[in-house]
Image 1 (cartoon, one colour):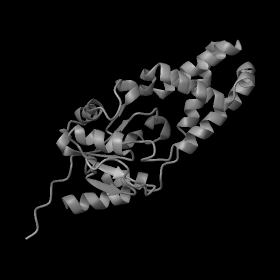
Image 2 (tube, one colour):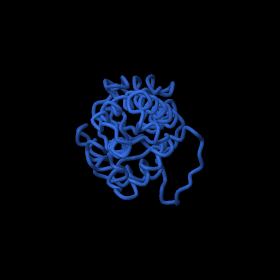
Image 3 (cartoon, helix red, strand yellow):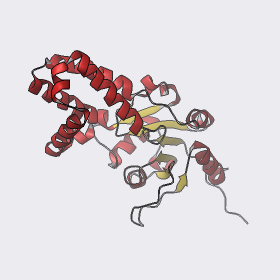
Length: 237
């Protein structure tokens, strides 16, 4: 006699970058767009720096002030302010530069399975997001599919800290044990969510090999939202 299936979770929470869309090419393109803006509007910065030297300066600033890890947008802003001051440009222009960068940073293209998958989940579970990044679901056009969204820059705590997962559960009105978290990073997403009391599904879109110690064991491994839905149906009927 087969064992009874578990009830469906009340909520499914998602990581964003590299779970719902690829982010590396978007960031590279956004940095190109930002630098083109600098050449036009802050030429002395563009003359003294390259994309690579600006990046290196940010890494050095992060090493000195690791609290910037909570908000890489704030890190980029601080790096630009320092570069503008060094080059003798008006640092009041930095906010315009950041507006240009964030518009390009949010020009993401979700994987083909994302919108159909979210629509299939809608109505069966509450949907949330927990991210360490600066993705803006409103700008991206997906906000209406989410019932709650928590970001490390706004909340002040980053994954894998349990508090950020628990905050999203609180906003969704579910207990951690009633939620499933889906993300691409084994340490930040799987390990973090499980320590907070959620079940965790590893979104392994690239077929990477599990490189973490044996104690990090996803509740499931899927390659897209179709696989996630299949797992939910197998587990919960």
